[in-house]
Length: 235
Image 1 (cartoon, rainbow, N blue to C red):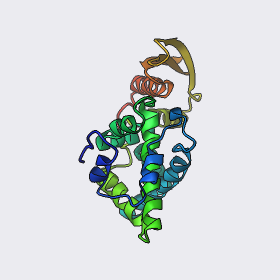
Image 2 (tube, rainbow, N blue to C red; image 1 turned 60 degrees about the vertical axis):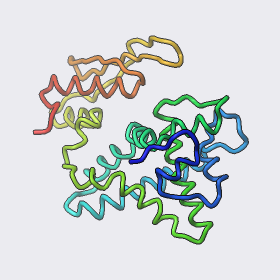
Image 3 (tube, helix red, strand yellow; image 1 turned 90 degrees about the vertical axis):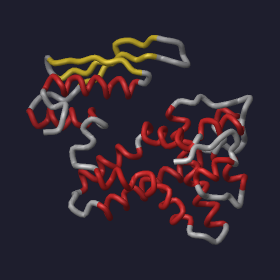
């Protein structure tokens, strides 16, 4: 996908969409840390719903052989923060956010950029609708271009590495073991770059992992415990 360059306007080229209302684009790129009266939280709320619906529709259309459980799990993998963060970086949203508010640039971690990506989808929808166009069609085209290949290539086991916490929970339930229990072992590093060490325990079994977020450390710990159980990879 084309990466944008140094100005929010370049984002339109990467998206293949030209805004009729630049204020909507500005709002989508306004993080709460900018102290603006109009940040992107409302747009993010709408964009989250549009994204989830569109991915659900693609899964329903493309995987007629799947039941609700596998579709829900794959949707969760596709729309999780890490996936949206990667999409935001491909679009150059990190540079676009800095260009809008150079003196109050938001932290460029996964969550702010994932939120901005969802806000951008909502902004496109509203802009297209205001111009008398089909907003859902514009959003669906972008989401489909991003995720269609992944949906077509996926197998019901595809999320075991992407969602090890859920896989661990299902594995221990199948084996008749206690439910996983997560606990923080250590929090180190400066406030802007913390390092979490998390432990997951299942009965007498336990594993630890370190990560830049609590969620990532928990996921890595869950994967290590799955490896202990011999369920780290799909059979």
